Amino acid sequence: MSPNRLPTLPLDGQRFGGQNMVDPLRRVLVKRPDAAFAVDDPARWHYTAAPDLAKAQAEHDALCDTLRRQGVEVIYHDAMQAGRADAVYVFDPALLTDRGAVLLRMGKALRRGEEETLGRCFEGLGIPIVGRLEGEARAEGGDLLWLDEHTLVAGQGFRTNPQGVRQLKTLLQPSGVEVIGVDLPVYSGAEACLHLLSLISLVDHDLAVAYPPLMPVAFYRLLQERGIELLEVSEAEFLTMATNVLALAPRQCLVLEGSPKTAEALQRAGCEVFSYRGEEISLKAEGGPTCLTRPLWRSAD
Image (cartoon, rainbow, N blue to C red; front, top):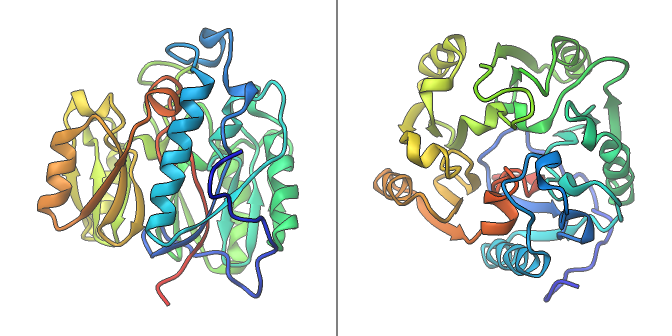
């Protein structure tokens, strides 16, 4: 059990949502690594090595403690999911909107089934399920970027397909949200995890950490049109997940240790930077701080 654990209680009122990536983070859902994460076949999961469970849990506990110190309420997704190593990356199976959650359909076959389990957790927290992707539609949270409260950019690649984007457009239309699909590159192939959010993280409404060499041209131009400044990471630090940044508030962010040049660039841009050690929970298994957290509520009020 994690130290300083907060009780999982129903959320009251409308304290969920926040259709952006940078407003102050009030509540977040996490899943502490359990036996499923300590895989004995890392190649099957596209991990670089089998995570050490005790070390992974210690890293995760430290990450959660950092969040709490910044005033974020940390809630645990406790459901056991035997055989689902990637369930620790709670960002991916759902999209949170101001009306409630949309359950996605995972593009990685080994992850299918996480969606409904997470949906039951949301319902227990008083967050309504306002829609589900169906049929052949596929989408993962890592491909979905709130550019602003009325604009969602969806990366189409090996994890998110055109059917998924079309269904998201239909589901989000009542909220007045425009969904813009952009095509992702092949990069290192279908088994690797290249999400749209592998390439960019917003750290303020007008500032992002990004790796432009792999960006879709249409998306790059959209960012320019919106006046979003890009802090470009090097190829070396792209490989250490420098682009995977969790905004705790505008220009306040959590990063994975190991990308010092990017951390310095963020600080020069006026950002307060917190870091965590993620040898086991991140570097071995393709998931940074954004992947490890599912924001439940962001609010500037």
